[in-house]
Image (cartoon, rainbow, N blue to C red; front, side):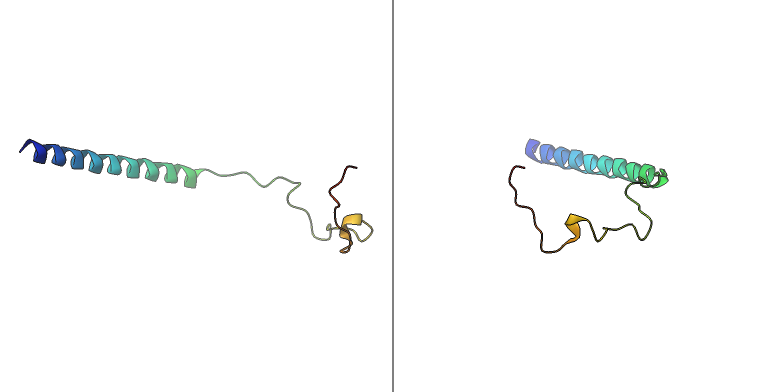
Length: 70
């Protein structure tokens, strides 16, 4: 009989812990959804036409790094 009560108590604690974690995650998701994030950094968003220039060495496809110093 004691074994059955122990198993029921353990199952109840697991169920309560699962419910608590679920509620905390829901609160966290609501907090994230309500937060207004800032605009991206200006250096990450470039206007069109500012890609690699043709004269830049990294723009040539046949050139690759040699991985040597210097």
